[in-house]
Structures are given as structure tokens and as C-alpha cells.
Image 1 (cartoon, rainbow, N blue to C red):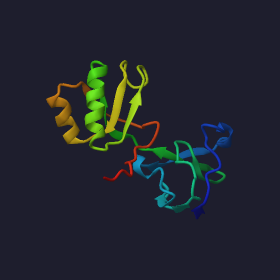
Image 2 (cartoon, helix red, strand yellow):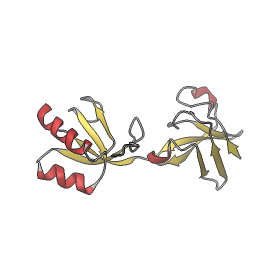
Image 3 (cartoon, one colour):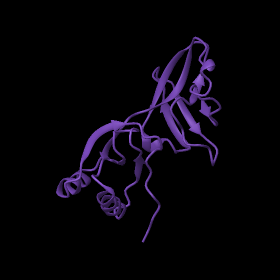
Image 4 (cartoon, one colour):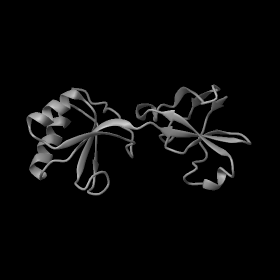
Amino acid sequence: MIITAIDTNISDHPEFVSGREVVGVRFEDLVLDKRIQRVTLPNGVELGLRLDHGHPILREGDVLSADENSVYVVEIIPTDVLVITPDDIHQMGFVAHSLGNRHLPAQFAKPGEVTDKAAMIVQYDHTVVSFLDEHEVDYQRTELVPPIPFRHSGHTH
């Protein structure tokens, strides 16, 4: 079966489940924006995705397929990340500038969203850990599903 569009998300339309089993089909963060890919359902059946150009990024709960017993939905695998919590605006600027020069994709969280402090979130990288340790910047390594998938910029010099 080939899926050409995602029409329903169970978060937006919980009534779509209507007594059926919800089966998660696991996706890594880095493939959520790929329009064309092959996925295997937990029962071994393969689905092809061939989404139109400009289709929104896949998100948790998007319905891939459904039958009378089951609804197969996107389940995003948590990503290995570093949650960086600098002490002040000066340290945050230094870290953001330094990691930005490496063209690392980053996300930012307000206090209370991920930790009690404002945070910069980047994918785990041992060289970033070394940098943070060297400059005595607080961080923690954890797994989470980021609100927006990480993607590398198309920047060139």
C-alpha cells in the first residue's frame, strides 16, 4: 500500500480511533520530513510513503493506515539530546555563538518547558560535551521528542 497523504491525526480527532487498537509505527526524528520512504508496520506489512511536495512534516499521531481493528499512527522515537542550561545571558550567547559556528541545529525552551531554566537543546555529540565541560557550562544528556524535528541547515561557505 502506498500512502500519498496524511488526512487525520488522532490528537486532533480522537474519535477516529473509535474502539480500535492504536498501533505505533516508529520513526526517527531525522526522517519525519522525508516525503518518500518505506516503513514496516508491527505486523510486518510494508507501507510506502509518497507524499506530495510541500506536505507538512510527519507528527506524532498522524494516521498512516486504518482497518476495522487497528489504527496505525506515527510514533516518534525519542532523540538523544543535550539540554544546555547556561548560568546567564552572557554564557548563553557564548554557547549559542560557538555551537552556531559548527552549524548545529538547535532548539530553545522557555523555563518550565524542559527544565526549570531556559535551555538550548542540541542533538548529542561528544565534541559538544567536551566543549561544554571545558567551559563549565551546565547540561544534561537525555532523550526526548523535540517539538520540531532537527534538521541540518543547507548552509555553505
